[in-house]
Image 1 (spheres, rainbow, N blue to C red):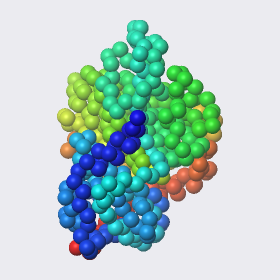
Image 2: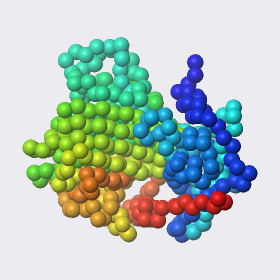
Image 3: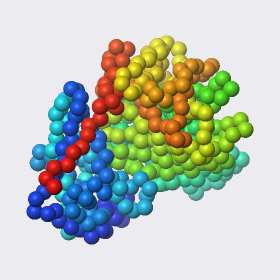
Image 4: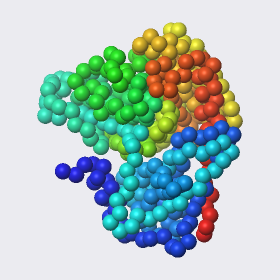
Length: 412
C-alpha cells in the first residue's frame, strides 16, 4: 500500500516535466547579519522560478548547493494541488552567501527525500461512541482536517492530547481544540519526531517524564505560551465562545509543519468575528509563527504567557521587534523553562497583566496580525541554562527577524 508521503511525491510528478535551458540559472541567498544562520529557511515563490528558469508552470524542482541537495518542501498553502512556493533550508555564514541551482526533475526521476525535522498532526477517535460529552472506546486515527463535533469539550477523550500538535527537532507544541483554545508545550529530549507516539494510550500520561520528554507547562486559565486572545474588560479573553471550529493540517514537513484553524463566530461582548489562525514551525527552530486574520475589525488582539511562581519577567527590543518573556524553574518537571512571545514593536498597544497571565496587547493592521512564540526547556537537546543565555538567545531571534536572509537571481 503506498504511503501518504509516496502519494504526495506522485502528485508532484503529475505535471508536465521540462528540463532547464543550456545555461543554468542560479540564485544567491545572502545573510546580511554578522551571525551565522544555521537552518535558515527561505521561501521561494514558484512563479519566480518559472519566470527565471523558463519552465512550464508546475514543473517539479530540486535544489543544489555546493554539489549537494538542499532540503526543501513544496508548499501548497491553499491545498489546490499546485505548488505555490518552495521552502528551502540551508546554512549561511555571517555576512556570507550561498549559491543555489534549481533543477527540474527529469522524466521518471523521483523527488529527493529528506529527514523529517518538522511536522504537524491531528488525531481523533473513531469506532467508539459519544456518551454525553465523553467519547467512549474507539481508536485514534490521524486526519488532515476536522470539523469539531458539538459534543466535544475539554477532557472528552476524543482528540489525542486534546488537540492538534506541531513540532520541530527542538520543541513541540499543542493547543486545546475546545473552548479553552490555549497553547501548551511538549519539552523534547530527542531531535526525533515524537508527536505520533504521544497520548496513544488515550490518557494524559504525557504529563509524566518519558524517554522522549514530557508536557512541561501548566496552562490552567492562562494564556500558556502565545495563545490568541483579546484584551476585554480588564483581562485576556481567549477564543472561548464560538459558533463552530474547524482545523486543517496545512503542511506536514519535512521542513515545516503548519496548522490552519477557522473559528466561526468568535463572540467578544456584543461583537462577533470569524478568525483564521495559522500556526507554523520550521526545522531547527523553536519559534512558532502565528498568522491571524479577522473577518471583522477588533480594537485589539492580545497574547502572552502564563504567570508561574519562581520565574522572572524579561523584556527586550531591537529594530522592529520586541519580546516579552519569562525564565526560571517553572516547568512541570520543576526545572528551568523559558517562554517568550515576539511581536512587532509598532503593533504594541500595552504590556499589562491579569490574574493569570503576562499580557501584550497588540493592534491588528487591516484585520491581520503576525507574532511569534517559543519555549526552551532545561532537558532539551540544546538547553539554555541561565537567564543571561536566554536573553542572548532572544536577542539572536530578534536579529534573525530584523535581518532576514534574502534572495537574488543571476544567470538570466
